[in-house]
Structure formats: C-alpha cells, structure tokens
Length: 321
Image 1 (cartoon, rainbow, N blue to C red):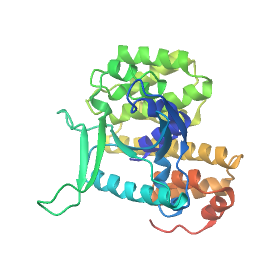
Image 2: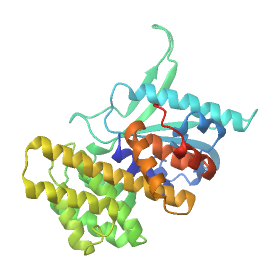
Image 3: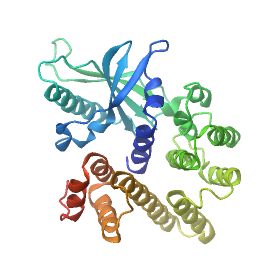
C-alpha cells in the first residue's frame, strides 16, 4: 500500500493507545503493554502490526492491518499473519496459553455500498463446520467526520479526507483541532503528513488535496515547507500546476514526489532507530531498497533489526523479495 501504509504504521507506533481504544468496547479498561517483538520476526517481519494488551485485567492481542481496499487476497493475508503470530506467541512462552487474538482490517477505499462488518477465510472442507479465521472490517472511508471525531483522538482525525462527507470547510476544522491538540510541532507535522497522504487516496472523488495543502500552510505559517517529507510534496504539486503539462507527465511527477516523501520518512525512521542521520551511502541504499523491494519491506527492516544487523543489511547486495 506504499506511502499510506508506511505513514499509518508510523503514526500507530507513536500512538498505540489511540489506535487500540477504537477497537475495545467502551467501559472496558485497557492497558497497552507494547508491540509484539519475537524471534519469529526474522521470518515474518510484519509482526510489529500486533499489540499486546490487557483488557479487563486479562491478556489480549490486537492485530491491525491497514488495507487500501478489501481485495480478495486480504482474508488470505490475515489468515497467514495469524498463523505466524500464533507461532510467535507459543515459542516465546512454551506451555502457556496463547492470549486471545483479534484481527482488524482498516480499509481506506472501496465500493460505496456498505462493506460487511466481518470478514473470514474458510479452510475447512465443503459441508464441514467452519474452520479458519474471522476478522473485523473497519471501513474507515465509509465513516463520517463526526464518527471519526467521536473516536476521541487526533490519530483518527487524519482519516477525515476519506470520510464520505469530507468538505473543505470540515477539513479546515480538522486542521484547527490537530493544531490545538498535537503535543509539538513535530507531531503536528507527522499528523499533517498523514492527512495529506490520506487526501491522495480520495475514495469519494473529493479533489481536496490542493486545498488541504493551502489550508495547512495558512494555519502553520510555513511549517510544512520546513518539513522535508511534506515540503517536497508541495513543491512537486506546485511544479505540476505551473507546467500544466500532459496528464502522463503529471502522473510521473506525482510519483516522483511520493517517492521522495517515502525516502524522507524512511530516513527519519533510520535516525530514530540508530541515533544519527544516515550517511550518503546509507541513504542511497535505503532509497534503492525501497524501489527494489517496496517501502514496506524497508520500513520493516528499520523497525525490526538491531543496529548492527541493520547496517549489515544496508551494505548487502539487494536480493529480490
């Protein structure tokens, strides 16, 4: 899912409590214990999508999968993931019961008709009782801005451009809320990044991205232009607007702008993990791997590998996934 997946997973790791609260029934006390981190991540790096919780004092695990659309392969992916996750939890605590696991697919776009609240992957023989996995479907793009706001966190406000009732007026209010509730300028920049990336998804045909950039710039007085990951997107968008070139050329320019944004975010993840900015050679290796393997694979490595393993991985020849 490219830049949307990277952006949302980055935000989720920064605000796990806000992510979890939307999926735990109201009135049930919940404590976030941390992200699943086990030796099985060397086989299946996506295990950082699962959170350890304590709900009503009992252990629970929540798996969240961000999906551009509810494609036919999503149930397969969820089923495969649960298998890896179950194995990881068993290996790290032999003999102990595996905590109950809940999977949620957060869907960003799709048909106008209501998606089912539950998905499933059946593996049993025809005519036999159900065997497989059920998972929840959160079609976030079918929510209203009021429903997203009711979740009580700025994390869910970044999905406002996806809402079926999104308008420029409503998004101006969302920008003001983020400005007021974010803890720092850095956090505001990250939230605005996600807001802009969600606007590029545009499931309802609301062409709000350009207006959104202008509104954020007006509110923050140049903050976005001083933030490389967003500033590159703005500069690229302005260049396209000034050139008024052919549609194909504009599409190539948009793709370059998105790639630059992805590279900048991956560089920031490297700096957070290693404690320094990447060298020119490491930066080049990050970009080359994002192009060859996909940005999600590189993000997984940045989040999962320790410092020595990460620097070795960047120095190795690229192996196709």
